[in-house]
Length: 258
Ligand SMILES: Nc1ncnc2c1ncn2[C@@H]1O[C@H](COP(=O)(O)OP(=O)(O)OP(=O)(O)O)[C@@H](O)[C@H]1O
Ligand SMILES: [Mg+2]
Image 1 (spheres, helix red, strand yellow):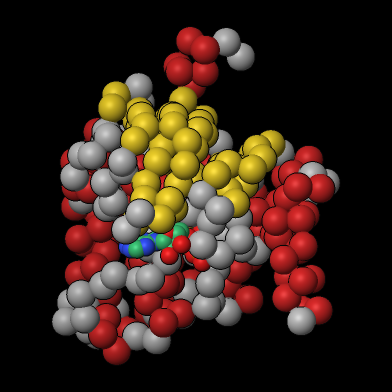
Image 2 (image 1 turned 120 degrees about the vertical axis):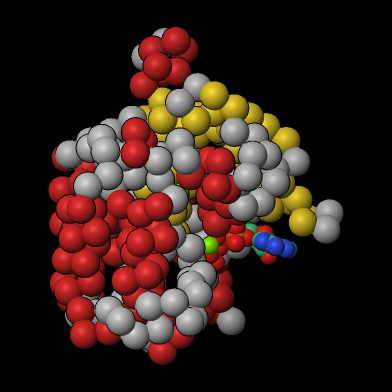
C-alpha cells in the first residue's frame, strides 16, 4: 500500500507519539495505523504504554509530541468530547462511572456522546438503546437496570461500560482490557460481539493481555515495550517473533527464577 492509499483507508494514524510523566517516558516515537473496518490489537507488558497511547488518541492525556490523525484530520490535544463526536467511543481499564446514576442512565449517556451521523450504521434509533439493554441482559445485569451503578462489582462495572459501547455502535471503538475481571463464560460473548460488529463495519482498537482473544479477533497487532513500538504484524507472525517472546516471557522467566 502506498502512502496515499494508506491515508485513505486509515481510521486513525499515529506518528511519532511521545508522552512523559514527570520526566519518565511512557511513550517514545510510537507509530501505528488503525485501518478502517479492521480490529487492531495493542499489546505489551505491564507499564509498556498501552493505556497512555489510548488516552492520548482519545484526548484524555495531552501528548508531548507526534501527530494523531482521525479520518485524516488532526485531533492532537483536542478534548475527549470533541474527539468522541467524530464517532469514537472507548472503555477504560479503570472503570469510570457515576455511582448515583442507574445502569439505564449510563446507557443513555453513552448513546448521547456520539452524533447521529457518526455511528457505524447511520442515525440514532431506538434500537441503539434496545441493543445496549440486550447486552445488559446477556451480561446478567438485566435485574439491576434501575439500580445505581455504585452498587455493582468491579466485573459488573466493566460489563456495563462494554454494553454501552457495543450498544452505541460507534464507527471506532477502543477497548482497554475488556476481559480483565470478567467471568470466562462472558469472554466468548464479548468475542462474538466484537466479531459481529466488525462484520457490520465497525473498527476496533483493543488492548488486551488475553493472547487467545487477541489471536481470535485481530488482523494485526502492535506490540509496545517500555514505551516504544517493538513489533507489528498479524498475530501468527507476532507470536513467533523472538523479541516479543523475550519482552513477555523473558522477564517473567527471570522473575520466576528469583
Ligand atoms: N498519570 C500518570 N502519572 C504518572 N505516570 C503515569 C501516568 N499514567 C501512566 N504513567 C506511567 O506510564 C507508564 C505506562 O503506563 P500505562 O498505564 O500506559 O501502561 P500499560 O501498558 O497500559 O500497562 P498495564 O498493562 O499494566 O495496564 C508506566 O510507567 C506508568 O507508571
Ligand atoms: Mg493499561
